[in-house]
Amino acid sequence: MTLSRIVMRLARNPGTEFSGGDDHRGYALTAPLTADGMLDEAAYSKAKGACLVRRFAPDEDAMDGRLMRRGSRWFFDYDEDDAADDEPVHRLGEHRFAVGEYVTVTDEDGRPLTYKVVEVQPTG
Image (cartoon, rainbow, N blue to C red; front, side, top):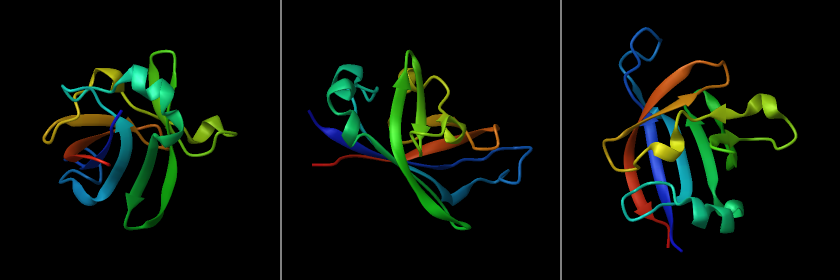
């Protein structure tokens, strides 16, 4: 099984302070992907501990967490003892991770923001 490093940067989000996007805000995700770029659920169940996420922004310290799944719901978890910090990812299991694709993440304030996939590379 191969893990991939996926980098997503904040895309244009009209109606927010990020209407023009922000290349300095985003996520770096490590996860197993299928040949067509979808999350590999079977491989995920075997490699949960290696499925990591890092949220980065210029005005805050980077946050390290894990990619987690409950039922069909995927989310980023930064503290396993505190569900309040979970960031749900809209229909993550249905997204194709390829450069140029878009992913919506609900931030810690509960607002959905769109990110653009800018890099997908095998980690090994």
